[in-house]
Image (cartoon, rainbow, N blue to C red; front, side, top):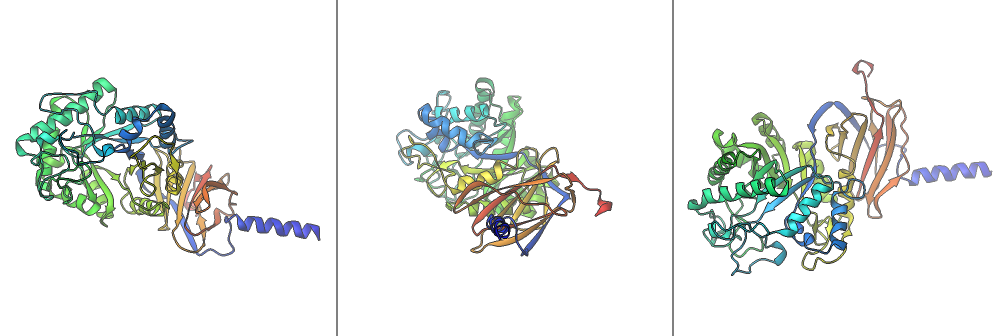
Length: 466
C-alpha cells in the first residue's frame, strides 16, 4: 500500500510540473535540414535610457549594466545602437530632460566632445561587458540645420525638416562623429543609420522627442551624401537604412531607391511595430544581398507576451540577422527594466517582460542558426557547434496546451532536455527535465507562458535512416 501511494505521488508530481501530457494537442516537428539566418544577436538602442542611467552614481548604474549585458546574470545583449543626438536649440524646452539628447556640434563648426557623457559611458560599459556590434543612428539633424529650428520636427509633420542647403553639413556631422568615436573612444560603428522612421508623419514641431521627416526621395539624397562623407574620411563604417516604423514602409522606401543609392547600403533596417510584408522584405533583402535587421520594436504590454509573439512572427517570416529592442529601461509597461527615467536614481525592477526576453536572449546566442520548426508559436535554433538545440514556445491562450516536440530528424541517442519557464507565477524558473523517448518529448504549456527547452548533445541524423 505504501509503495503504491509513493508511486501515485511521483506520478502526480511529474504531471504537475507541466512537462508531460497524456495526449498532445500539437506535434511540433523540428527540421535542421531547413536553415535560415545565422544570428548576430540581440540588442538595444541607448536613447533615451543610456543618457539617464549613465548619469547615475556607480552604485546604481553598474547594476543596470549587468542586468542588460551580462550573458549569465542578465540579458546578454551583444548589439548596441548608439543615438547620435541632434542637439536642441538651448532656448527651447519642448522635451522631457531625459529625451533631450546632446549634440556634438551646437553651432556650425563648433564641436563639444564632452557632450552626452551618460550615453557614452553606457556604450563603453556595453563594450566592456561583451557587446561586439555597434551601430549609430540619428533621429534628427542639429537644430540649426532644420527648417523649423527644432529637432522635434517640422511645423508641418509631413514636411522634410532638414534644410536642403544643410544636407552636406548633416552628412559631415554624422561622419565626423563616427570618425571621432573610432579615433578617440575606441568604438568602431559597423553601420550608421542616418534616418529614424523617416517617412512617418508624426515628426512635428513640439514633439517630446527628436524626429525628422524624410520622404523616400529625400532619404535617397541623404544616404548618398552620408556615403560620400564616410568615404571621404576612409571609414569602414557602412550605411544602414531606412529604419521605417513598419515593415511595409521599409520595403516601400528601399524599393523606391535607385540602384546608385542601394549600392551605398550594406544593411536594411526595419522597425516591426506594424506591417505584414515580412516575407516579402526578406526576399527583397536576400535578392539585393543586403543584411536584414529588425532594428527596433517596443510595446506597452508588461506581460511580455506581445514581445514574445513579435519575436516569433519576425523570426518565422522575416528571418532578421539581429533583433533589437527599443528601451531596455523605461516605465512599467515599455521597459524591460522598470524606471520612468524622470527620477532615475533607483534600482532597476525586473518585470515579466524582462524574464520573457531572457527566455530568448540567454539561450539563443550569437552564431546560432535558426532552423525550421513546424509550429507557429515556437522558434528553434542550433547553437554554433550544432550540438545544442534551443526551442522557445509561447502559449498566449487562456488555457493550458499539450505539445509534443518531434526531434526525429536528429540523433538524440545522447541528448538530454532542460526547461525554463516564465509565466504569471514564474520568472525563467528551471523545471523538471522532460524525458526524451524515441526522439520525442512532451510538455504541458501553461496559459500565458513562455517556455525554453535546451536540448544538449543532439547530432545530425543521416536522412536515409528517417
